[in-house]
Length: 477
Ligand SMILES: Cc1cc2nc3c(=O)[nH]c(=O)nc-3n(C[C@H](O)[C@H](O)[C@H](O)COP(=O)(O)OP(=O)(O)OC[C@H]3O[C@@H](n4cnc5c(N)ncnc54)[C@H](O)[C@@H]3O)c2cc1C
Image (cartoon, rainbow, N blue to C red; front, side, top):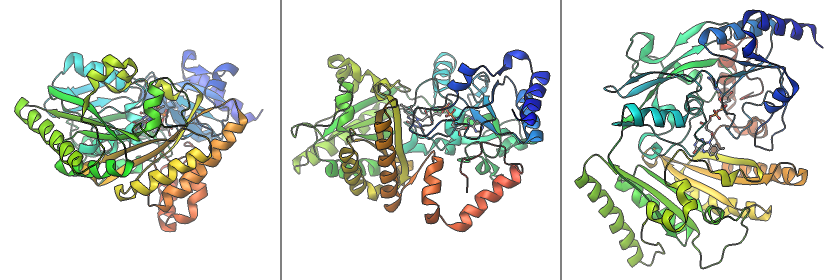
């Protein structure tokens, strides 16, 4: 065993209470990989921090000994981003889970890293029913702060952009143990915006924990409109559905719009890896969220959507009339998963392996991307699950190919690895780029990235983390 490693672990044990540190074999194994096909690696030690002072202690010791530190909460990023690929410390932030402040008037909350989607939903429902948060499709036990740092997407992202756009600022611990604050919180006790400060939050967003550990986040909340509805529109032709989405986006009446390809419907009915669609079945399920503060506005929004559907139907477009999800749940209870977010989409996890090429890029590239991507998935024997969502007023969109696989079957792991490579080639060709970017994507496509952009990323990392201890291997250029 490396003497330095022994040294740093005994120093950790000296400076932190014993119940924060874990190095038993079984526990280390639990922290070594995730649901994806990306190879795992065992860490040397897990530290469960309870406070910003604990984070400072760990970072100072690790920095002194030049030992890697990998921050992590629920490890559900589906990109291998919390795999400790060079060993070292996994800094488990799940127990820093306090909601430190909720400002009802200025509509923001200050959260620790371990606060989950489930926590904020319960907290607001019980204490601030006039406010809401946008909810993602990620499981309820996962971190909001990590999601915001990864430019996540939620059911308010059509209106308000990725969750990184909702950041008012944060407190971060640098590898030296120094603490900085970004946004107006650098001067004011009311942390309601990141304007008009130089935007240092950008040094942490999508850097995947390579520049420091964010220990507190101020994030925007939204009005919780009393009138809301989610419904499905079944579409029998993918291209027609995308034309319809464009109409809806420009009408500006929806909070969220999501296209789900046909295998999702079949999975909700219990098929684990659906590879066949009867030509009479819909190609896509479109879900639409609408809300309003006032009933008359709500009725107008619903009427506009109904009118657009009817006009399309008259022109021969094969769309079903909107189905209220609450009514659908009565005939098919598994649709409950889509009735309200956050949800446990456990049907995606039933085979033990889950991976995706999830991207942001131009909505104008959806039709070609979906067709070619679904073909690639079917050729490799995977159910062609595709999710598309317009973002931020339709200025860009999500294009995400999801593969479920048996992680214990090496042949499937190899096949899904090949599939993801081919999908990454396709999407980058069409002007999209994978979000929550897995390290292998950066290596494979390095030559397509602007060299000066890459240099600048490396300079920022070097500036904030001169010893290269923070989550090494991630966004590594
Ligand atoms: C079925 C399913 C559906 C999903 N749907 C969505 C979706 O609709 N939208 C979406 O955006 N995501 C989705 N996700 C992805 C993921 O669940 C979310 O992004 C989630 O919020 C991430 O939280 P986590 O606790 O798992 O983060 P982790 O995986 O633990 O961490 C993510 C990254 O952030 C870094 N990190 C963690 N904490 C800190 C910190 N304090 N400071 C600096 N870096 C840090 C980690 O090192 C890692 O690089 C889905 C996942 C699953 C399994």
